[in-house]
Length: 320
Image (cartoon, rainbow, N blue to C red; front, side, top):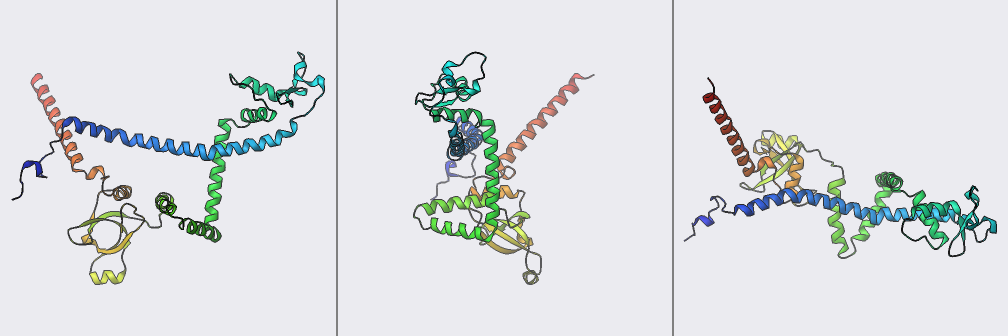
């Protein structure tokens, strides 16, 4: 005989402890923004470490190489900065580094004034590296320049991909990646996500519907792509919709079916909410489709209505 105790009855209200329920609700509020911030910080840190820093290092190396001709092996004794006299133009003098080479005094002076508590570089190239950082690689100059170059590279890469030869190169690269064990599993998963996020949608979805598919009694979400073919419409003797039924958790694939318009149930959700529901395998439900949210809204409206009636009653008693 089946156990019909209230504990196993799904229609009975939840007996979850109020404290635990409140903590879980608090986590539901705090975790999404925290995870969003962590993801953005992780992306920014990764870009800074593997893209921005190598970019800045390459530019610094190129500039140091450009200024390397200004490093002198020997200079006249009266041009050494140790003998610099007050009121004399310092641009004609040199500073002798610990490795017995000479750099322009203006370069050394800029490094010395901005070095702080750190010791001065002991080589002439080290002085110039620091000079290049202070003079040309300031953050407010490097970051906008890097972003402009990065966007330009993405634009040129996108134009290259639009050409036939670009697709050939990328196709050959992907075929090589997919031959590597373990790597191909990670790459294919990441590729599906990036294609879903960044690729333009070739299909325009008009609305979200629910249909009984693959059989009666099982409801699936579908995206209406348009009216179906005339022959199918004539056979059905009523309007027929072309519907894409996406698969979870990656809705980039699915089934295209044709359903009578009368058998499609329009849902009060947006396309983005439908994708969130599909990607999360039904975990993320649109707020307007949550029974609990509707009950809380009705309860809040009832409390507000009762408060308004109570205030009207008090005003009626207090009035003349």
